Image (cartoon, rainbow, N blue to C red; front, top):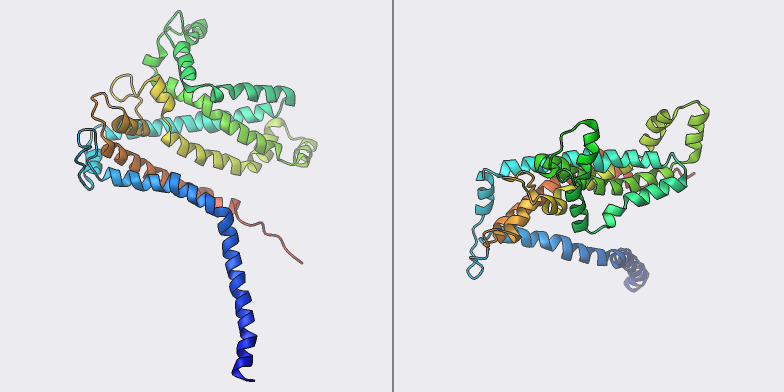
Length: 323
C-alpha cells in the first residue's frame, strides 16, 4: 500500500472525527453561552469589582485621589468592636427566621393546605402570597401599625384579652417584630415549593399507607416527609443564602435600631457604610470589604450544604439498567 493510499484512507476519518468533536463542543456552547455571559456580567464581574474596591480607600472624601490600601479595610473590620455584635445579629436573624418561618411554618402551611379541599387550600395559599406581592414599604407600615402602642396596635388589642400589658413592640421586642415580618413573607416561598413536592407524590403510596391503617400523622412522618426530603434541603440552602443578603424589611422597620446596632445585620451594615451614612462620608472601600466577607460566608455555607446534603445525588443521572 502506497503512502498516498494511506493518506487518502486516514484523512476522511480524521476529518469526521474533528467535525464530531467540534459539534460536541459547539452545541452545548450555543445553548449555555448566553447563560455564561449573564453569570459573568451580573455575578462574577461584580464580585471581582467589589474585591478590588475593598482594597482601596474609596469614599466621598477620597473620590478624587483613590489609593490602594491592601487589607487595611479588612483589618479595620476585624478590630472593630461592633463587628462581632453585628455578626451575632446576623446569625440570630438567619437562624430563627429560617427555622421557624422560612422552613418550619412553610412546611406546616403546605401540609395543612394539602390535607383540606383543594378549593380552600388554593384560596389560603393565594391569600398568604399577598404580602410577597405587596410593596415593601406598605408591608412595613402595616407591621408598624400592628405593633404600635395601645390603643392603636392590633397586636396589643389581641393580647389584652390574655392579660398581656400593652407596649410598643417595635421598641420593646424589635427582634421579634423583625423576624416575624420577614418570616411571614419568606414562608410563602417554601410553602409553594413544599406544596408542589407533596402534590407530586404518587397517590398510590398515600393510599397504601391509608389501607395499612396509618393515621394522618404517620402518613406525614413516614411517607410525605421522606419523599420531599430534597425540596426541604433545597429550601434550607436557598433561604439561608437569601437571608444572609437580605436587609430590606429591617431597613424599613428599624433601620438597625432601636439603639446601638440592636438589629443591624451584616448586609445592612455594608449598605450603611457604602451607600447611606449619617455623616455624609460614605465609605465605598470599607462597605465593599464588608460585602466581600459576606460573599465568602455565602460561599462557605454553599460548600457545606453541598457536602452535607449531597446535592450531587439529586442532579446525578438516573441509574437505569439496559438489558
